[in-house]
Length: 249
Image 1 (spheres, rainbow, N blue to C red):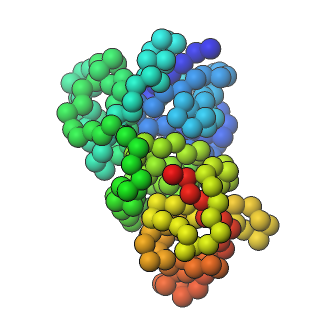
Image 2 (spheres, rainbow, N blue to C red):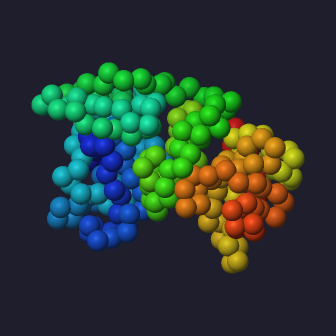
């Protein structure tokens, strides 16, 4: 087994080993992974954080040893906590990194970080505060940063910054936690899942106080939620059909 770490700001994960292939997720700075297959110029990886698999360009990561992989795994996560921070690389040049980048192996690859970091201890009370950092971030399929993010990437990153692991896709996330019978039983930070006309879960958001929800629909936005689903006040109609509310924490 071979191992790697992302030493660049944001690296796309693709469905196939081609730059023309769909971006299905992203690797953020400092995230580590196993290399499970290789092709010319490409590696198929499995992220340590959420087990997500896909293809990345071989020029966009560094290989590390098994001991280094285990060392990173053993440490409490240290994450960048501002929308944009800076790394000084081994040549003394500045490189931007996005919110939620992992800093555990920064010094070992010759990089220096002088910004504000957080040790992601488990804390449910800060989930909505963290979610608000992403407000108005544009929707981007496969995105995990304030510069482009999808619905499941959004809730995953909010939970990551507060010390909790969620799977990458909304259908997978819906299998985590305990279901609630009614919206009235929910607390801020609980997750609401929505399905399409075929019953497939395809959307997720974070419950807020007073029957509001923060989610990604064109951008990260706040809407009303009721027993039918999400009500978009701009469109004056329901846009997503409620399937289940889950208490993850």
